[in-house]
Length: 283
Image 1 (cartoon, rainbow, N blue to C red):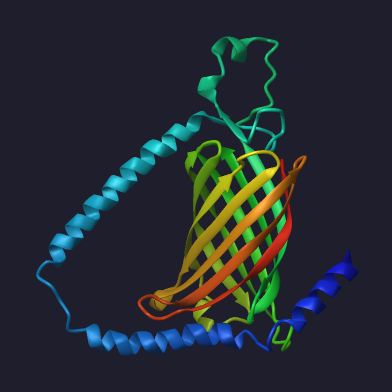
Image 2 (cartoon, rainbow, N blue to C red; image 1 turned 180 degrees about the vertical axis):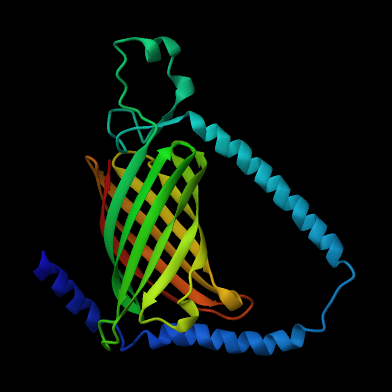
């Protein structure tokens, strides 16, 4: 396995132009300079209708929060199968309303469905002109209304040998809706970069993301994981990973298209794209 992974790294390096994390740092630092110059042009701009816009935005935000609350509470009736397609006719979840009280209270009733679910995965990725790396994720729902997640990604500069940088996430999962064949989760939490990274990203930051999951038919698994990191001076980091997987019992073999972007709000950003692939276990 080690020889196979080493061969993969060597093959990738032949198709990757020389680069380093300096490109990543430079993208953030340059965006700060552009922000300062563009900000000077907008300093004097003001509008008498700003109060009206603020009120409209507040009303719209309250409306969406109320809708989210209704959808979120409905998730309390969800029950999870041991893993996707674990039994004939099942995908990943059922709703308690579809289980009769007589069957639920009967001594002979022994449903495998439960209030919780867990998954753990690890994958390798390649971002053209930036780095190769490894990403490990733990995802769970303690109860159909709330869960937690933990993620860690390490980026290796395998061409110029400028070291490595890492990014860690910790936070909560809130289901927006959970249905067959599509579920949507909102992720909120803490994130931090470490090792060889620009000082602008050294401080902790707020993270917000979304995770789409779909199990349309056996053995297919679809997942789209995307999120934003918000730092001081309007610096942001955006990450997207769109995956296609195949279920083999409780194991999922997946590959995906990865997109990575950084910069400053209202200023042109820099992006990279590449591929990912790995294995996930559901338990």
